[in-house]
Length: 335
Image 1 (cartoon, rainbow, N blue to C red):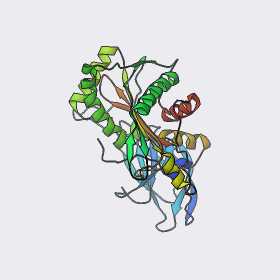
Image 2: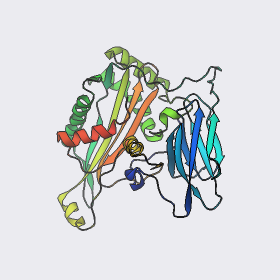
Image 3: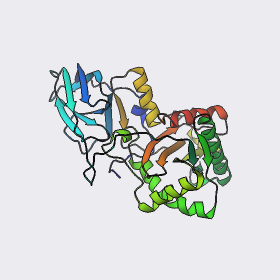
Image 4: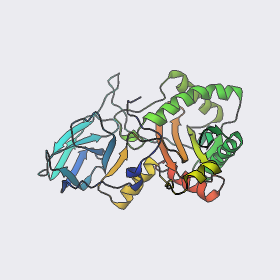
């Protein structure tokens, strides 16, 4: 698992899903190509930054965009990633009008070329019972509402089945002692993946990400074989709700906004034609609202095929329209 850390909330710069404008920068148009095409372009002001709190991506090749160059130094570093190929870093200046980068195939431990990213054929999607907690927060204490948590879990499962109707057959894995034992290791590794894997860069990383332990990969294989499914879908999250007294005491202090998912915000930025998209690597925790994260796991191999996460306002997930809004955003990019 990579050392990249993504924490549990998305800050305002992601919500806008747009390029940031540096008042001390100047723009220059540039054409960027890669051989092969389809590589993700990330923009940095220093070579391989070690203390980066945000990541800025310009899109995938072939690309024609105006890049913001800082006045000081007057140069940028482009990080070029594509599954199955060795990452490259290239320095560019305002004088660089056209750039073509030839990527070198990456090899695994056996010396064989790493396969490019490919989404498997999925006919039956196995939904792991969602893990969700509704937390009631007061001024001096907080507690988990078991009854409301159970209702939200059922609502999320129903919303997921509705979302994928006509695309996949969704089968919820039933509760049983044997299944719970198998899922324990899957949840352990799956939670790590949802926290550590960058949702936007996942399919462009040079090599695939897998469930970390052999036990988890074997459990995923057994569940796939037992229920005839090609992939496991994990859903987890929580909702912080404030008691009436807590809300009353905070009147006039401002209201929490509605956020978005990483992949959903990125897709919206691409659709708008934004020149770049900035999102947080490290983000503060949220005090009020709904947080959900998800991961799709290949049953046969344990490969992490897709991840996404997001924070929304105080949604009523028993409301079909609000639930649909969340699932549509959360499952963005899941093809």
